[in-house]
Length: 117
Image (cartoon, rainbow, N blue to C red; front, side, top):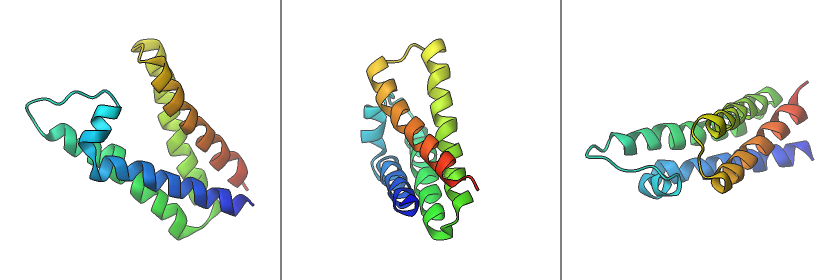
């Protein structure tokens, strides 16, 4: 059962990352990121919101080891902690923060707790 949820979490990670990787303008709009006169922002979304998560999810699937899934969980924990800090410092839209942060927190919790050996 743990293996099935691990694979589902890794595939979800790849799917989330693909949005940033192949559709950075859609991702920027969804995340309330405003374009500027440069396309560097699109490059950053492809890299940090896209490719990083695509490759992390694929690596966990490829390695298939519990610690690979734990590391994926730590990545989500980092993202969730950034959202908590943002809640206090930036006052982002609470609904979006709760949705994205909730997903990140749930994935972090599962991947870390279920795979620690």
